[in-house]
Length: 109
Length: 115
Image (cartoon, rainbow over the protein chains, first blue to last red):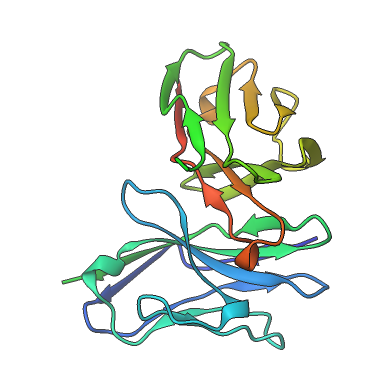
C-alpha cells in the first residue's frame, strides 16, 4: 500500500523566513513524487515534481529515498506563497496517485 | 481546452436525497480520478478509471457511493442516500499516460453541503 504523510496541518512563517513543508511517503517500489498547490479560490495545480529536479517560484524539493521524504523548501517566504500544499505519490502500473492530507502555509507580513 | 469541467459547482441538499456530480475530463486524457477534500482528511482518492474502466475503488467510503464512466468524456459520482458527513468538496481530475511528469489536471470542484 502507498501512503503519504504530511505531519503539519498549518505552518505559519514570517515573510522572508525560510519554509519547509514536510512530506514522508511509504511505498515499496520506485514512486514519482509531486507537490501540488491550491491558492485561494483556485484549482489544485502542479507545483513541481521530483523527476524534473526543478525550482518553481523559488521552491525546491529533493527526494530522499533513505528517509522516504520529499520535503518542500523555499529560502525566503513571500506573502503570495500562502496556500494549501499537497504532497502526492504516483506509483504502480496504473499510476495510482495518492495525496497527503495537506499543509496550509500562512505567510505573515 | 477548457480543462476539466465539473458540475454542479455548488449543491445544497437535504439528508437522504440523491446527489449526482458530473465531470468532463480533458479530451484525450485516459485517466480520470475522483477525490474528496475535507478539512480533517485532506484530499482522499475515492476511485479512478483508466480508459473508462474502474481500476481502484477502494477509497469509496461505502455502498452509498458509486461512480461510472460510460464514455471517455463523461463521468458521474453518485451518493444515495446522502448524509451530512458527505459534505465536502469533490474534485474530478484527469491525466494522460505518458504526459510530462504524468501531471494531473483538476477541475474546480463541486462543493456539496448536506443538511
